[in-house]
Image (cartoon, rainbow, N blue to C red):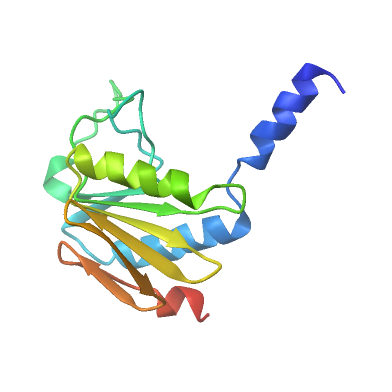
Length: 150
């Protein structure tokens, strides 16, 4: 196997899975019910060399796209970020990423671990863990029972 084949194989193993995609989609369905919020996927934040949460939630009035000139790293931090752990990812790495996002100004990060149906909630006050239940932060609520008990 050539070096190129090895790097493509490694890169492919980091790609999101079916469970990852399904959970993100179901979270977005619930977030889209909030007219006053904008839930955006795969948005790169201007943190370090760029951090990209699975989902970023902003007040609608802060999101003003300009279709003639794009922004590759958004400086405005979301009020909520969501990370869903894929099979190829390490939970410790994502919890450290959540801490960096909070330190940069995001109020709350939810890190979803599908295998145990755990939701790690990271704020500037620390971390807590909830299991397969409603989670509410910054007035935003998602019912994880609707996602996991499908």
